[in-house]
Length: 254
Image (cartoon, rainbow, N blue to C red; front, side, top):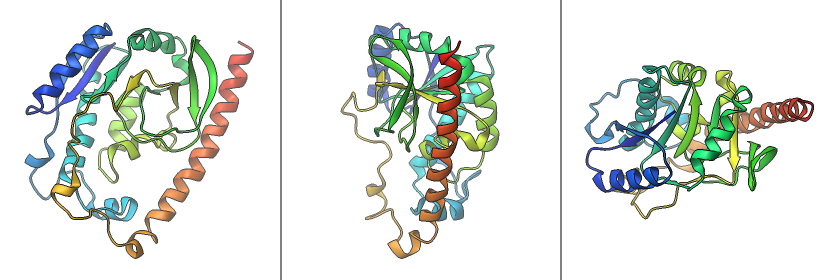
């Protein structure tokens, strides 16, 4: 398994920081030249501005497009190899000393997941499935999780996500957190072995440089964004509850 690190050409400080932390963790790195949203030409290809507005309730942020298509680019690069798994990383992530060992342990249970979350920006309400090593568990996140700084995908997940997520309708971490709509299963490691707030790098997705407020007025958002998120949250809970019960039962009697 290789680590595909998404990095903008101009972010050399991030590259060096990431390279050092991955070397210390014993993880082989492949740099993916990130798509620079600032250089994308309009009208944006494979982007639905209408659905982005309806589902996300915000104005177009070019750096969000760059982030989205950079992750897809990393998965495309992975599928050009014969590897069964890929570790995909953003360049503001910190790797724990035992992260490689934890990933290795989790792949032994690869039949129970297509996507393995290794970082996040929310609690996610993890329900533990089994212990990987002392202090670390595989779990099912029962609530929404944001951030896509570190995760593992298998070949099935990469193929399905590339097909289903070809057109951007919401930010990448929102689309990525809807795996059941793509016929995929996701598990997480708790606590996260990668830290998405490890370094004091300024965010590269900074809407304040473009808009005083990227959000549309509340009256424009609630009639479309709320129903979309309501369906997401309800379907997430139902699917992941079933996944938790089935996975827990199988592992209990294996």
